[in-house]
Length: 277
Length: 277
Image 1: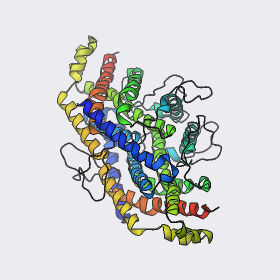
Image 2: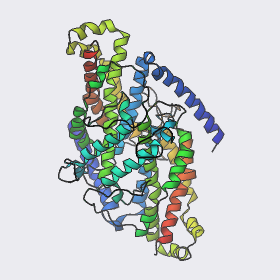
Image 3: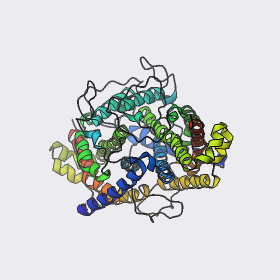
Image 4: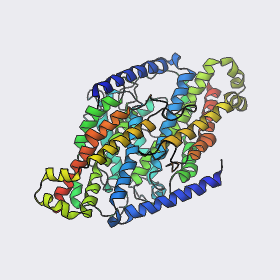
C-alpha cells in the first residue's frame, strides 16, 4: 500500500495548504480576490455533494408536515425542530463565532460554551446584521427540493432533515460569503464604489458587481462538476459514459443562475450600502 | 433552462427509483443480494464525499483535547459532547428506529418523539445487539483522520466535529449493513451456513463470507471513485488531467481494505453466530 509514500505526499499537500491558508486567512489584509474566489470554487463541491446526498432519499414529506411530529413543547414540523435544535447545539460548540456562518433560527440562540477563537477581522461590523436565510429557506423547500428528491417515503425523516440542513448550511455559507467578496472588491477599488454607496444607489452597486462572463463561467463549471460528482462511477466504464446522474446537472446550473448568484449579489449590495457607516 | 424538459426527466427518474425501492425495501422478503449490493455501492459515494469534506478543514486538534472545551456539566473533549448531543437530537427525531443505524453513544439515548415508522422486518432481532462503533471510533480518530486532515488550526471546531460525525455515521452505516448482507446470504443458502453456526465456528463463517476477487474489485472501485470525486474539476481540463486530489485515493482504498471490509465481515459473523438463536 506504499504507506511511507502516502505519508510523504500528505505532508507535501499539507504544507501547500498551510501556505495558502496563511495567505488567505492569517491576516485580514491578505485576503485577496483570488483567495475569495478559491473558497467560492471549493464551496461549489460542498454544495453539489450535499445535493447528491439529499437526492439519496425520496421527498419524505412527513419531515415537513406540521401535523406529523407532535413533539412535546414544540409546535412546527420536524424540519424546524431539527434545524433549530442542531443550530442551538452548534452555537454552543462555537459555530456562529465564525463570521462566515449565519443561523436559520437566530432568535434565542444559546451562547458559545467554548473559548473564543480569534478569527481575522476582515469585515465591517455591519455584516453581522445581514442574514438572507429566510429567502434561502423558502427557495430551498419550495423550488429546489421538489426538483431534487423523488416522490416517495422511506421513513428516514431524521436523516432527511440532516441532509436538508447540510444543503441549507452549504448554500447559506456560499451566499453570505458575499460579504467577503464585497469587502475585497471594495478594498481593491474604493473610489469605484464610494459614489454609489453615498447615494445609497442599489442599482448602481448591482451593476458594478455584475460580470456576466464570470457568471456564465460559474454556471458552466457547476454543471460540469455535477456531471462529475453525480455520476455513477463504474469500474469498467470511463468518465462521461454514464448519464444516469443522481442530481440533474442543469438543476444545479439553475440553482446557481437563478438563486445562489443573485442572492450572493444581494448580500454584496447590502454590505456595501453599510460599508461607509 | 428547459424547465418542462427538466421536470419530465425528473418524473422519469423518480418513477424508476420508486420501482427499485419497492423491489428492495417495501417487502422484507424481496431484499436480495443485488439490492444489498446496490446500497453498498451507493454508500461508497457517501463515505468518499464525507472524507473529502473533512479534508477541507485542517486537523483542528482542540476539537479532540479534553483540556480545550470546559463545557458546564460535561467532561470530555468537544467531539464527544458534539456527537453525543447530536445523536440525542437525532434519536428524538427517530433516527435509531431505522435498523441500519447504530449510535456511538448508546447509553442514555433519549426515546423517539415522532410516530413510529414501519420499517420492513428483515433482520433477526439479535442484530440489535451488534454495535462495533467503538472500533470504528478508534480507527477513525487514531488511524484515518491523521491521513486525511492537514496539520493546522483554523478555529472551525464545530464544523470539524460536524464533518467528523458525517464520516463516522457514513462508515458505521456501511459496516453495520453487514447485518443485511449476512441475512441475505444466509437466506440464499442456509444449508451452507448452519453447520458453522451450530458449531459457533467463527473461522469457518469468516471463510464462507470471504470472496477475495469481490473485495479486490471493491477496493479498485473506491479508489477510482475517489479519483473522480476528490479531483479539482476545472472548466478547461478533462477528467483525469488533475491529480491534486483533496483526499488521496489510496487512503480510501486502504480504509476499505484494512478496516471497512474486515469490520463489515466481523458484523456478518457476529450476526450469523446468533442467527439460529
